[in-house]
Length: 114
Image 1 (tube, rainbow, N blue to C red):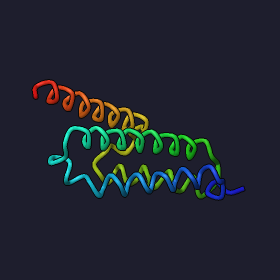
Image 2 (cartoon, rainbow, N blue to C red):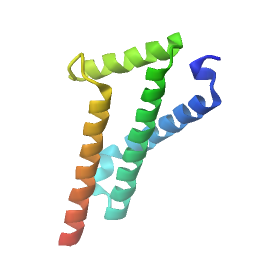
Image 3 (cartoon, one colour):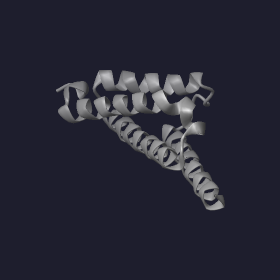
Image 4 (cartoon, rainbow, N blue to C red):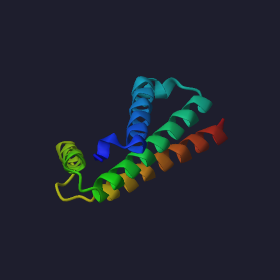
């Protein structure tokens, strides 16, 4: 069975796509969102990141040629966005998780100040 014909992988990729669309549609309105909307947006970011990390791990564990190719494209994309060519993607995922936590903390601080 090919990596991408797996029902689990297909369902996860479909959910990743839906999350990305939801997030991208609202990214520019984030500053004008109320606190609850911002919390929801941050939760979506975290959910997306976790699903991307799991998918990337699955890609790393697969020897399916299409999975290997997709993993290489992800690494190439990260490099084109300015990441060092030999960076471990898990480091990037962990850094992104830290940024999401910082967003959540800043939102909590601003909520306390209100």
